[in-house]
Image 1 (tube, rainbow, N blue to C red):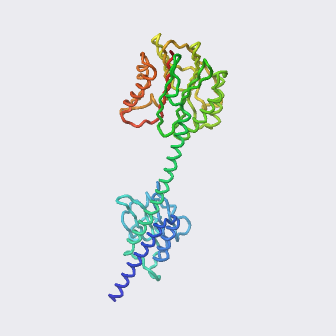
Image 2 (image 1 turned 135 degrees about the horizontal axis):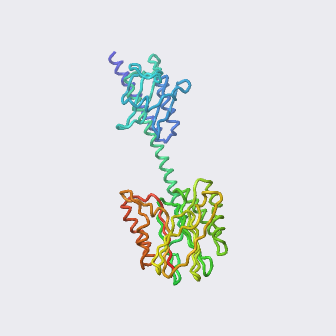
Image 3 (image 1 turned 90 degrees about the vertical axis):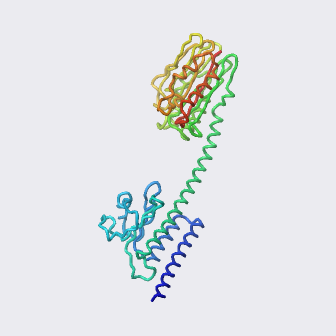
Length: 410
């Protein structure tokens, strides 16, 4: 009898070892998740003679990975957080007064990593009279170990696929970033002569952003410029802005009236954004002979102009609503002013003024006014503002794109 018992124990031990080795080999061979679950199901049902098996695992939320030997979809009534989360050890359900939802099952086997639950296995209809290895209470720890191996392998496969997906997204973002950098003028390429000077600063929140600025020479005496911001962030905002840039450059000529240009741009944004996003825009046209600046502010943060001769600060607010907010803009008011010698204009996106410090205080416009209302050239002004906003943020991550476009009229 003792020899028979010893042989039986040896047989069971060999079976468990062989089973775990086979599963490990399947994992090493990178078998699909579905195949691993089929092997797991066969082991529990055909080899361990378990009539019903229910397996839950966590992947952002609890979900049923296997329901075998169960009639209908009664398992859908079971909620892990409500019905299973209280179990932290193997429990025989028939020895407890438990909810009716679990009455089809005999044992619950929780699987933990440290103190974090990975899975719950419910087994029922255990027939110990059948031939084969008996799934009695002394073998439940083996089922627990087997489940742990399977679930960890499935999770590792998921993480591997997720890492591949993230790597692919990163490459796409890098490509989009390079493409976008080709669309936004390099500050070093902006003109600087005896008539005017232009410079810019661009700091996207992500690899790609929804901010945009541009400078366009319209003819010998006129140039156009703009700064814009798409509602929202990320790739979708960058794609919309790229499309907008192409439209603006195609439409903005010396002949077109600013109101007509704004209305055409609004139609383009409305068509492309489909009501999901809008663009705020400041658009200007300057004549270096007459020194007249005409502009439209389409819902954008008002640029700040410092008139050196008058020692006056002016906010450029005239315009209309943002582009894409309505299919048709009700009215457009064209702003106009004459620049004095060494007047400076600073255009910016809301990421600048809305940058907050540790005390949740916004950067605001006061520092902009202080930085611009002096005899420093526009390049120095923008460098000063960029430095001040960085100090204001106090190592906090910027939550939005920041763009600055500065002009000085000599």
